[in-house]
Amino acid sequence: MLARYVLLLLLILPLQEKTVQVPEPVQKLLKAYPDHITGYKDNYIIFKDGTKLPYDDGRQKSAGELLNSADVEDQFKYDYKPGKRERGNTMDPGRIRNEDFFKKIYGFSAKEVEPRLVTVTWCPKLVNQKIRVTTVNGLDKIVTALSNELDRHPEFKPFVSNIGGTYNWRKISGTDRLSAHSFGSTIDINVKYSDYWQWQCECKDEGVKLVYKNKIPESLVAIFEKYGFIWGGKWYHFDTMHFEYRPEMLP
Image (tube, rainbow, N blue to C red):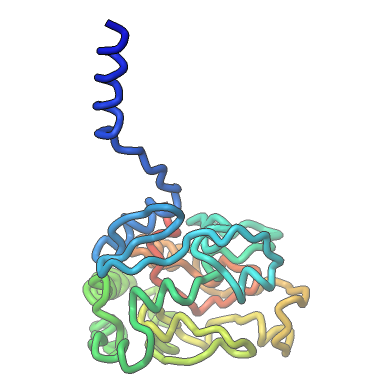
């Protein structure tokens, strides 16, 4: 009787699939980018074309290393919290990026990114400015919906007029890191009403002590967040004109 039980157990065990524990950040990426990411296994994010990208390189990193040598897990090092920016904040939620991850989503070069761009009319009633954004993730439609909502708020016209920039394949000033503007997934609003940490310190030293400045209304930020954009004004290295499509960072 015991022998029969053992034999039956040996037959059943190979049929049982091992449960893969998917880290919560990866679950957020799967939800945010379903057209690109299809799974996770053995510490690798699996893309639709079958290619893989390491999730966690297992290294402890300094603040500088997080910015310059981030793995995908590091992108979630700091929680992005919608609503009012916390006083005394020393974190940069969303500013840490794994460049290979975003290249895989949007394109590895300007030559790959640019055919995926379209022109959108930004706030047709209030501003009527043409901007270029990517069609990847249906972002052109998301930006159109965002624009239409902003168009119903004339109080925001000074801030959303004269858009400072969308697509621009370039490096971040003072670094060798690729700007999120390179992917057509970022909007800089009116520079006239914006504050930027490098303007304040008149330097490019990311280790410098900063005093936060901002003129952008929280109610305007909330609308951008509603459509999946994080705000650079939440960063210690503040960039208050900067809105970046990062739905995985938002609740």
